[in-house]
Image (cartoon, rainbow, N blue to C red; front, side):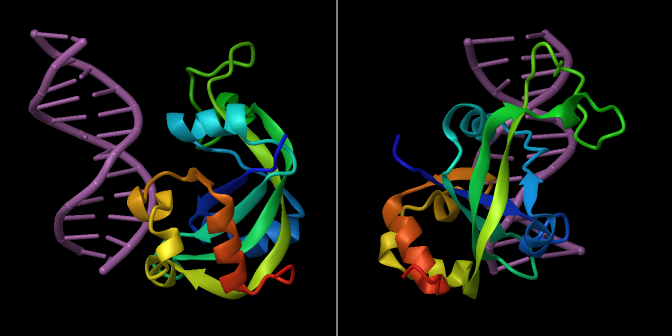
Length: 156
DNA sequence: GCCAACGTTGGC
DNA sequence: GCCAACGTTGGC
């Protein structure tokens, strides 16, 4: 199966790329949107590439890349009552929400800002620019390459 | 801090 | 099943 590419958004005060580096591997839990859930459950598989995007006032930029180390599996925080992501509709025997694991690969030399991305014709159809609110979204190989290049990833 | 976009909920 | 109300995200 061909490797696919994704963009994951995170508010850096909630979870930043630096925290991912420190944690080595992160469970991408807490996604509570059905479209994003479907990607996590059905499409995102081990080995896929992830652009890590910081949303919010301080950053608004892709800051690095990550790799999926575990394909979709049930998000156990949904049945963890003290968790802020608790959702009584999800049960271990019939999970509603899903997550994947990711690992940091390389921090960008240069964060690629939202303002910068808006100026690149190759990126004009990016979901990030068209429907800003989806927190897990597919990225085309062309978009992936353009952003990695701008970010100064060593492979380019 | 404001507000547009948009996903979700719930009354009918 | 429709749609108004509501809540959240996230850029500005």
